[in-house]
Length: 75
Image (tube, rainbow, N blue to C red):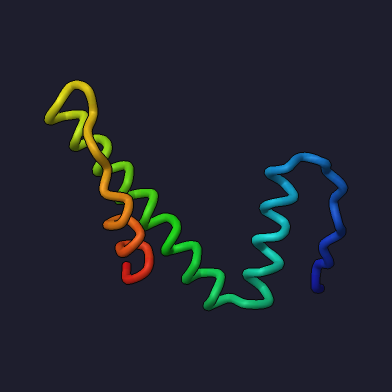
């Protein structure tokens, strides 16, 4: 017996964002997964750069934003 989902009315921003993501994932699965992967790759790259710079110099250091952008596009 198939289960039908009912629209949930929740005003929180995070919930609406998740609903929109799931709609995009259903309608455009490859594009949505590609964009999600690029964003997560770039965030991971930026975080690793920040942590490494912080580890080397106690004050932090410059972060290569262009490198993270390239990583997001090609990664």
